Image (cartoon, rainbow, N blue to C red; front, side, top):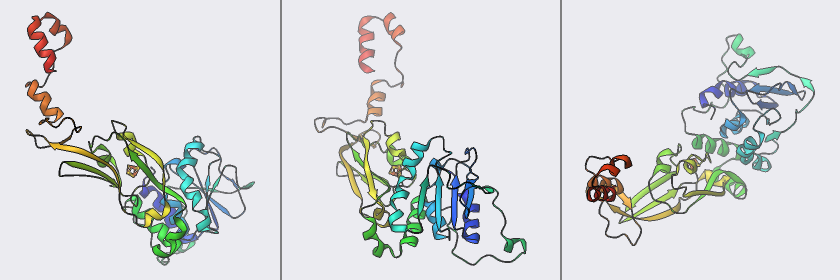
Length: 310
Ligand code: SF4
């Protein structure tokens, strides 16, 4: 993702200038200068596929009337379109102040291209006048899901009043199913938004997803070693404004007699008392296994015993 702090100068510039049409282009775009007459073009510091989804919405909330995301110069346009698709679904709700994806230049006029890292100073700043009036800038330290929720709530009015309009529109959060979950908790630890939780109680581990926090980054799906998590769609935009947690998996769990860590078992394995790590250490106290070449030189009974241990 493009770091939020790197986009703060652009947001400050939008608040000061309130552009009629703001076009965002990838850092690698060969020439984004061809645009419509009233457009301002900003070249980002990264690819549009790395643009946090809250940024275009915040630009609208800060005064831009339209935000155009330029896919015409993006080398990975298909992946970028998939990343930005949830914003497109919002167009009917945000119209006429919407977000649009463009696959061709929006005009033939050549306009200066601003560099996101070096946005121009407004006239008021050059005259040393204050430009503090207007909506406050988003806090770059807030997590993505909070910025997305705040921008959405700001654009669509009071959360309760707008949620009905958003229930049919696919938002950014992934709808997940878990099959073969082993309750290892890797997804919980890697989720940057703390959208997943794993709670062990009364011999059962429960994996729960909070759709209002999920930004659809897919990190949890990639990190799951048993590949138990599968995306099956998107939660609606209304989930961002508040949604009950969804239980993804319930896994029978025991507590290791030696280290006290929870570990999962199948219902048939009720006799297990040690987790996999403690079971291995118990069988091989020095924590290592004997290489096959060494086993081949040992007396057979000894080699068989060591093989069984590992
Ligand atoms: S896709 Fe997974 S890792 Fe990313 S925010 Fe959603 S739950 Fe967290």
